[in-house]
Image (cartoon, rainbow, N blue to C red; front, side):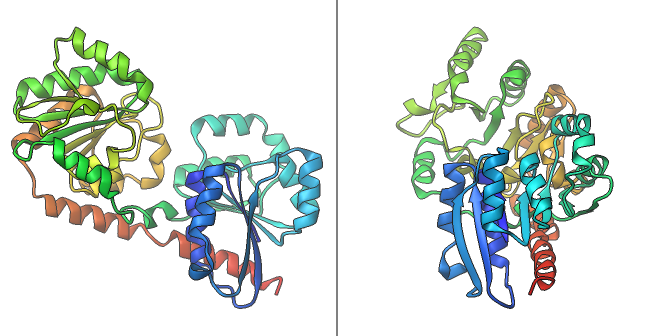
Length: 378
């Protein structure tokens, strides 16, 4: 079997699959990645200690998708099964795999609206380069794949990401540092992963929640660090005083704004928050991960746009694990209500955990499909 993980996200999925896979007889597995980060994750996560004794594993770079290179790679590797993760659709690879009579699976498959439009325009090409089987992470993704590959069996599966959510422990270093700067007597509101296109709306949210509930600390986390200077100007122009996270050396003793200019601390900071608004969601930019703050028992709010996280399913909103609102005003009102009437944090954590557990099982489904296919070759 050859399993390809483009970058970090897909590499974690590949690690989950291969750690769970239990072939009945010896199986040679090649795991590849397109990025150095992906390779590092594969090498770290896939050791002899956590793999079946029947798996003979090799880890290599993924070859560039040029016909001459791919032709040679497929001939040399000669895979019975090719497993591609999420949105890996390579024309040269598919062509030579079909020539080689290898089975092609796209697993944990998702297809953004932008990519769907692109592939739909070249549908005539993919009719002759179709995979054998697709397991998509949402009905929407399954429908999109089915329109491109009409003759292929497309089913849905729980996203494998559900099985790793909340399993990573916080790094003790940022945890200790954040503890030292946050006041323990004031609620913390986080405006997280704010994108350039929604900055004006987030300023409005910030002003409204501070006016209605001044006794809080609000931490603003821009999605990209190069926006920090712009945020400085925006806050200053609105007469909003703020502290730079990098400049705080002792616990804050009064309410205020923290402009978070230190990278890599957002997930840890979620554990201290009373309320979190997750950005990338006020404009059509795909959204950001709103499960992470929810499992830390914070009241979690997102805007109406979350196309990249459609796999999470609308049940998360129906069950109240995450709150979805349509615009900045209703988001601000939700934050204010959560601050004025605090909810039971343990109840929120239980709800989030139950939701995650009810959506697990994707890895097992994938492994069963792979093993069933292996049986045809052994």
